[in-house]
Length: 459
Image (cartoon, helix red, strand yellow):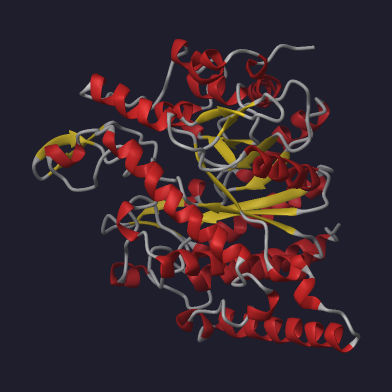
């Protein structure tokens, strides 16, 4: 059997990455304080549990076989400043609405994964930036530093690692309460529609779907079914994911499962490796191959088939369904040229991966006034191309990965309410990249569901 890091003692499983080249490394100015904070993290309970992570592994195996569809959604970069119960509830509601639309349209169960409770760090193309106060370290997410443009705020502070853990723990506590305490019940499908979404074209369309669900529920009750005892109708499985960028943080939260004696990254159920850190011999791949979580990899048009096959072999040598998720982020103009060869190469090598579309990151542009945005129609173009290409290549179109917010922001142009470039400054709040708002998110879910149905994709 091929040896993997999960067969070795904890020091290797959690720390072997330190001997590899590392991109996006954090240079903590106070190394002693950094070590102290990581020791604090090592003594804290896991944020997620191995049994939950194995459940996600099973659901992803279903998606790899074409028996489920995966939705990963949430903020571009989470903020320490918006940990509010109402916002977490609204974020969850948008994901539940999208999942309902996708399930209704495709006939498949939707695996719901929040890009939340840990997405506090972001890779940057440059470690420094020009500001009115001169050259400062780039803002890299609240797990590392602050967005305010002064030298104190931008200095990496390892105490933020423990802060990030505490914020994630609080958020997960609320998420578990909402998903198991009645909020996710199908009897509440109308309550998920927020006011500003409800008055949009997408919101009206969602209400019609909710009425269909109501009629179906009433019919089942009339037939004598005691739906209050049906767990699947009263609560939902919900998982978390984020980019495993800050390896100091991730390795400090690596734990051995007492049941299987395997190592798990316990900061989230699924961890992914970004476009800037997916070097085959790099530290991030080394860390990821040593844990038993499902692992995602962002794949751009610059990735060659040979490189991707090598990555798959390194991260999943046993070819285990549900272990590996490939997130294509090509850009609408490049997806049709780049994606087919990558999909075909991975299929030929027998890797049972989940292919997902990330139609956001390859389609970011800057307006003439200097505002970063994404055009809804361009995002849709890449997503539909992805669904068509994977289906034509004989592999299941496994899911979609989106940056969105429940708030009525104006960060992406287009959608059924046709946000214009002139309107972007009305309510632009993102700490990093532009996100879909609630109406645009529902628009996308309806379009994706219709396309899946037109392809004949269902379980």
